[in-house]
Every structure is written in C-alpha cells, then in structure tokens.
Length: 633
Image (cartoon, rainbow, N blue to C red; front, side, top):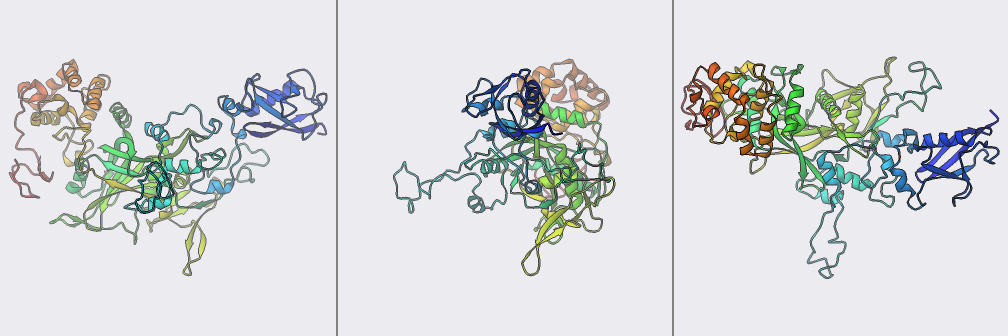
C-alpha cells in the first residue's frame, strides 16, 4: 500500500484523479487514462508540463523512473490538436463514461429544474447519436428573441439605433410573459434552455439531469439495502417546487367535430370515456419558442366504463394504430378523458365540479399521467440519458363555470414523473386532491419528499409529503379550437368509431357498405380520408390490408387524389367492394361512389342520423332534429 499514488490528469474537459503505483509501467498507466477519459490508445498525449513538454510515451518504464510522484499533475491533450482547439476535438471522441462528468449537487437534483442546457453545451455532456423530434430541431435553430418597435415617446435615437426601450428581449423575459394576455406562468422549454446558457459560461457547466429516487447500484462498501446504505448510493431528498417551464405550451383540436364525436359516447350512455390523442407538434407563435400539440384524431381503446370510473383493458391493436398514425405523419401526443355529470338534460348543462375548492386533477389521474409521460419520454440530446421530460399531454373534458363542457389541458412535472417511475407515489382513498409518498420498507428505499406552504402568519413552512397536495405536481396548458377549422381527415361522413359495441356501433363490412352508400363526394380521397375507416381497413379480421395500404396512407397524408385513385384500382379494394356488396345484401352498383364511381344512393331511413347544424345524433324516422328542431336536410 505504500507504493500507491494518486496522479491528477488535467484535460480540456476537466480534471480526473488516477490511482497508480510507483512500480506500474507507463503503458499500463496510459491505458487507465484512456479508459477514464474515453479515448483510444493513440487518441491523446500526456505531458509533464502544461506547455506540452516532457511527453510520456507508452514505454517499459515505471512511474518512479519517470519521476512521477504522489499528487503530481499531468496534462492531457488530444492528438493532432492545438491547445486552442483541443476542446472541440475531444467532443468528437468516444463518449465519456458517467464518471467523467462533473458531479451535480443534491440541491440541483431535488429541484424541478435540476438540469438544462442548450445547443452551445459541449457535446461531451450530451447523449450521442440521439434523433430529436423535428420541432425540437427547428426551434433550436431559431433566434427566439422578442423584437420591439421604436417607442415614439421614450426612444431618442435614430431609426437604426437601439436603446433599453426597444432592444430585443430574451425569450425567457418574465416581465414580458407576465404582461401577455392572458399571462404566461411557465416559459417554454426551449426558452428555459436559452436562459441557462445565456451567461458568460454559455452553459458549459449546465447539464440536463433526470431525477432518480432509487438507490445507486454497484456500491461495494456495505451490504445492500436494507442491511446498509451510504451517502454515495442514497438518493437525495426532493423538495417539490413549481416547474418554471413546460414542454408543451398549447393544445389545439383541429376542429369541433373531433371533440363532439368523442363526447357522443357520454351523451348516449352517461358513462365516462377515455381516448388517445393523435396529431403532431408544431410551433406555437404566441409564446417565444413555444410548442403546440395539434390533435387530428382520437382513438378509443378497449375499456370498461361507468358513470364514475374508467378501466383500460389490453389493446391488441395498439401497435397497428401507432404504425398507421406514423405512416400518416402523426404520433400519439396525449390522452383525453371525460369527467361529466349532467345537471339539466333539457338545456344540456353539466355540473362544475373541478375547481380550486376541490381539485383540478386527482392524485390517481396524476399518477396515470405520469405513467403515460414516462412511456412517451422526450428525446433530448442534451441529457446524459438521451431522454428528458415528456411532451405527452392530458386533456380533461369537464364542466366549466358556465356549466358547459370545457376542455382543460395539463401535464405533470418532471418531479412527478420521477416519483411515479420509481413507484414512490400513491393516491389517497378518501381525498382525491391528495397524494401520499410511500415510506421506506425492506423491499424499497424511498427518499424524503418535502413541499413548502405558508402558515397562518405568512411564514414559509416545510412539510413532509405525507399527504401531498397534487397541485405541486400539475402544470396547466391552454386548450383551444381554431377560428378556422382544419381537417387532416376531410371525410364529411362518419364511419363508426372503434370499441363502441355497447352503443350498437360496430365496425364491420355492413357498416362499411352503409358508409360508402351515404358518401356524396365525387373524390375517392374524401371518402377514405377518415382515421377510423383506415384503422378498420388495416385491423379487420376478414380482409386486413396492413401490408398493402401504404399507398393509400401516403395519399391521405399528402392529400393526393391521383395517388388515391391509383390505389382504388388495386385488387384489394375490388375485394373490399365485393365483400361490402355481399354483406350489405345489395349489388355493387348500388354502393354509390365507393363501389362504382358514381353518385351515392340515399341513406337508409332506418339508421340514426346526425344533424348538420348541431351534430346531435337523432333516432331513425324523424325529419327534424330533437336538439335544435332544424330540418334534417
């Protein structure tokens, strides 16, 4: 043990301490250094002096012969690089191990904003070869500054000059965000990254760090938990803070039809309903460097629903739905559920139950949202794990202050995601607005979780999160509908929605025959441009088209009528037409345009029909809408 020495090695990326012995050969020592810094054997050089003199070569000489003593400092430079550009060369080398990264204090881990960086952070801090979302790549290239016009009263300079009253603001300027209408409580995620990298160090020492509530593995100084634990492997305590940023700044449904069709299930049964939101992420121009989740369709998975509960069951079609959505240029952006209770059925009002006096999201819903967000994490090249946060949103259809149906958007914070991922958070049975952090047991160590509140004298008091008000975990997101409706799927008819057998709405070839006979459009693309119809064509058990529908999906994605007509001439569609003719009990010539390319036959008078004015589903045999009293035609 007397021969053991510690040698410091300084590099452009930081300093490391390498354990060695006086009798160790220089070649073995260089291998240790290369492994520590992530270099190959010939990718760097080590010198005794900072001015690159006294190079240590891989030769059969011991450390004592080279006169390297305990505590000496050596200097590492990448091969073939000058001292001024060595940092850039090191960024392109083999990624460093976690031990080569600077340690993060426990206070930074316990905060909700424990981590961030930007495109100017050295690549050695980031996860290599990670493909970010297109919207993230686009926003990373944007200037993001808030430009202001010259103030005629305060500015005293020429047209080309700038002063404090008109100089562009940074995208994270809190005063600007607070004076928007309505005020913005959370800056965008990319604006937050710009804030962390806007100082003199340009984010050199900032890094995105995911919170962990688990004991670090590999600690050999003591028996495993519960027999032993130390400060090296023990997770830090967490103090819950309001997250300063949010990954999604706005949720927009393309049109009212999407939401109305989803609400039809509750209107007809009184039972609650849940669905997955499919759409895409775009730039939200109302907030600097903001992100908007645009919803184009809602997929309703198999579920058991009552007036007060929802239970999801296994969905054998989940992979096929995601595959179809990807080919249509869409992805799963969130989930939606109803919490509606009718107040007066004559005027169509609902009860206002979710407010500041009760809760906005229950603890169980927060845990479910955290589970979904962990399952759909956000790819980020600035995180060591390659993942940070999530863009997956939660939408609640519930009663508003005016007793009408409102859509409220939320996310849960990164801290909540960590508590859910590591199975530390539980709901309270009798208080939906309260969660409960588990206590440590022999099977699991749970770190202490705290939150701050004010007492009756206005003093800040720290409480243990047993129980925990869930408002500390929630981030609210504005949910909107556009003034000018948009339509990714432009079909004017309504093909039955999946998994609604309880309503008598089934997806089968009889339904398809009825749908095609009711279509009045002369464009084949308009007929097949229905998300639920495309799902049926791919997932039906009689004639699945999963391997042959790619051309049609491309036509819908690009709105190419010629491409749709090309697919219409295929054998697969001819088979579908024949099945519809057989199952529907009518010749193919009467199936309207869907079969022969001519005008459609009139809709059957024995089927329920939707009012063109208010979209209410009326019983067959009526000529006036039961809701708005307007004529059927």
